[in-house]
Every structure is written in structure tokens, then in C-alpha cells.
Image (cartoon, rainbow, N blue to C red; front, side):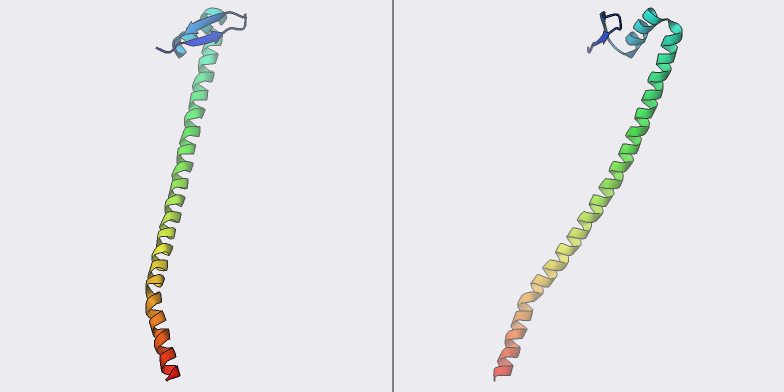
Length: 104
């Protein structure tokens, strides 16, 4: 079990197990009204964090698409280069034939 150490403003420290324990500690120290406000802030923060995570996931998806597209382009260029290099010996043979015909 993970326990968190809450350092309070009055200098004391208390261990809490989870968010609920922390909220109960806040209620005991500060009262219910402030605790409700803090709960609201925590929920708002969680919502903002979820939104940021969703945005990050979308950006990562876009980046992955761009990388995959670039990789496909590189593969196509490599295939084209291989085709051109495989034709090179045939071209060299033709050049030799033309030289031979020109010299004869």
C-alpha cells in the first residue's frame, strides 16, 4: 500500500492513504465548506488533466501518421533507386556497344 505524507500548514505531518483520506484530513482541519471547495478544485484539475492527455494523444497520433507517411516515402524512393541501379549494368553494356560500333 502506498501512503502519502501530508505536510500541514501548522507544521505537523500526517500520513494519508489516498485522496479520500486527504479530503477527510482537510475536512477535519478546515471544515466542510473549504473541503467541498477543494474537492471541486481537485475534480476540475482532473478534468483539465484528462483534456490535456487527450490532446497529447491526438498530437501523438498525428505525429505517428506523419512519421509513417515519411517512412512510406523513403521506402518508395529506395525502391526507385534500386530499380535505377539495377538498370545501370544494362546501360553500361549499351554504352560499350555504342563505343565499339563507333570505333569500328
